Amino acid sequence: MSRTSKAFTLIELLVVIAIIAILAAILFPVFARARENARRASCQSNLKQLGLGIMQYTQDYDEKFPYTNISGTYNTWDVVILPYTKSYQLIACPSDPQGNTNAGYGNLATAVPGYVAVMKRSYSYANYVSGVAVAAVPATALTIQLAERNNGNYGSAYWNYQSDFGSTGPTRSPYTEGVGTNGDFSLRHLGTTNFLYSDGHVKAIGAASGQAMKLTSHPRYDATNGTYTSAATDLPTG
Image 1 (cartoon, rainbow, N blue to C red):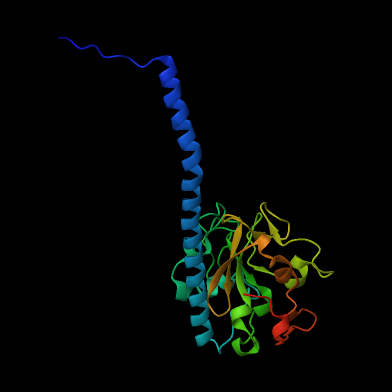
Image 2: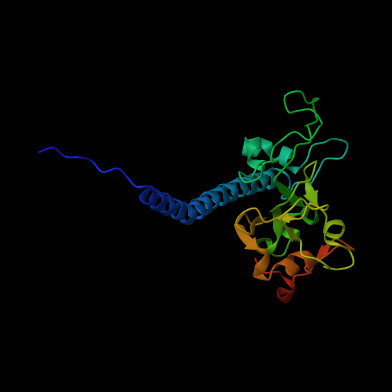
């Protein structure tokens, strides 16, 4: 007895296509979220290694944090800790397409001795700990050292308390999805930003966590005289 195979009807084919489309709509966001979680973990690893480089630097330089930049050169914090980190790729977050790209001042291979080209960075250094003695910071576990920021055209090496956050007070959230004029904190990891604290730990903080205003006002740091308060009630939660 011969058997005849029955072909799919148009309706059956459309049903199969619809099922595949529904499954794709369900699974693609899951895969995208998993990928971004992996990138966030890789970014946190970068920050931890940069933090380790900063700690090693302080041990060799009188227990003082690196300066944001060296006067008279283009050398910045990420350059002075390079002998410890051994990799310039650490300044690039895997979710930041601009990280570690040339900003128009040549490149590392052709830089003049004593200078390093200005590179776009995924992370910026807190200006309020620039060159500060570790012992002068009363709570390193609550003091932000590096933050993920939107880099604009040149890649900010550091952020300044007053100029970037506004000397008239926190009138806006420091977080933004786009490229802000002040290099605002970047919510590039599922609505969160990775921060490195001065004790070496890393934490992801979201704009909806209630910490935006604390990070903006930073009441523990007095920008007028460059001093800190040790009052526990004034410390932003880390």
